[in-house]
Image (cartoon, rainbow, N blue to C red; front, side):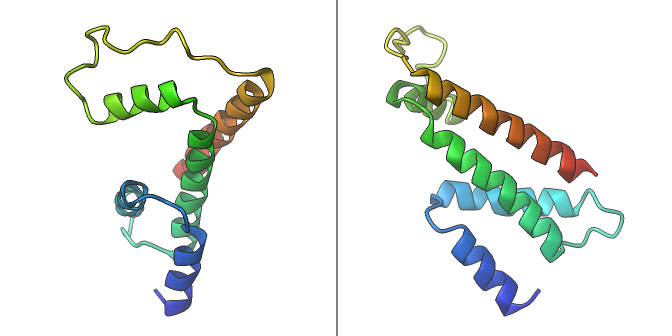
Length: 116
């Protein structure tokens, strides 16, 4: 690993939350251990980073209510499943739905590419 690679990743991950960064580092670890020699390469780091960029863009398509629901699901808040989250105000325009669908397709393709 070189300083240039670390600098490149730092610039490319600008705007990520601390939680997103933590999840990305864990994903690097997990991806490296799927390889026969368990070595994290710059190419593998970039592939995982690309997937996280797509996920970051997907979060931008969420409505406020969707973000609240996802936050509750991610942190297993005690209100999940109790019906305390009102989903009646989840409204999106057609362009936002198309963007979200496109990003999900790209994320799924990135997952498949990482397996190769």
